[in-house]
Length: 519
Image (cartoon, rainbow, N blue to C red; front, side):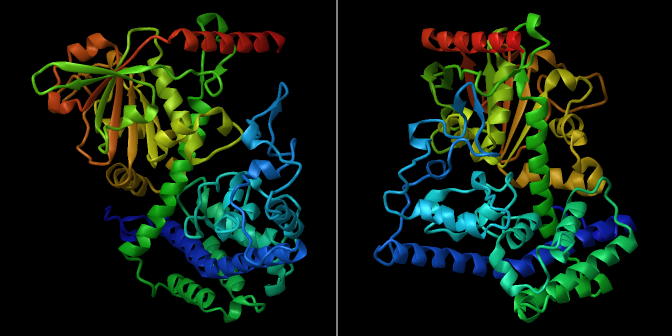
């Protein structure tokens, strides 16, 4: 774990750490209050629904998915193009006008709609099959519409999400004196502070701004309606006072809070980066003017997995599952080499892995274009780093490639102190399940520098037990790399699309070309 502490930072940067902690402590102080209110709302809904419909007390339902309860089309949820909704993507996911067979879920939807301040619940966030048993799935209906689908608890939810629940659920007004209908109420202003701190364009906070942050957040935690008497809120308020006065020691535990929050920020910036930078390919040089989105177009090829047998022979097994490519039984191979001749789509495969990972961790309207098996295969990786090796001709170290080709293009490169961000990346690569994709080994050679590390046939990397490195290359390059068997845990080879997949690919291509011509 990194040993960075505020003493190593410039004064303005140490204020940045204090601002981060102030927001995190405030969130922790609000969590029990929010959880209790949402849980009470969930239980009341279930009791009222059972009573109103003549059902036995305790009647529950877990069979209706959210799509079954949301009419089509619904603004901000349904994406209807060419007569097909991506949200209600198949028979099992269609809106059910007859309602819940147990008379629970569609009535629950009405209850949620009625208490939402703007009558606009974030249904994309939530899994209705869990509404009866998991109150946090209900809470997610009151959060912003994007980025919260994978948040399983209050602890995993950021400050913006927690504050949004208070602002959007009308019942909270009963325990808060501040008028939440007022657009300048202190909860709205606190949410602005959270956004300013989290998305600051520079890793500095002025002393005057920090004082304003402390003052408003303490004021919020002192609201006389309920929070002024709440133990958790007052504990958080006391921490803010000590933090501002310098009597709260910012120790390793404090810095770990900041690191965890910063990792989540970096993760979602990665998702935005890949969806912007690596989500398209060109069908051919003649169609460069029309980049083609991989989602809904790409066809996952079959692959052959080569296994080294004890007698020196190689055994080849054809698999169709993406999960089988990234695992070996219960083990995760840390060094995977994927080879394919020119034209079979190594780069497209790499990019598709990246955007599939994005959807697995932050689904949007494109989510339904991905297969559940593919999403599950990459969901276990908390972070993914895609490196195009031809763009790192002067770099020989994987960590430096990630910094120069990915991290420096993310907003966090300017909003976090440089020394903090470097240590954060080291933490991630060492402690988190990561997938690093090095695309195009055949387009990279070791630069002529003073590096003495061996071997020089592949980029240098540290041995990490949670970091999987997938390298793509043409077969000839792998053949001349002279890597030992111990350095290659799995070898896979892309094969040509079979007849059925070729037909599917051609149909997808024709649809896209036709659409481009119409545009």
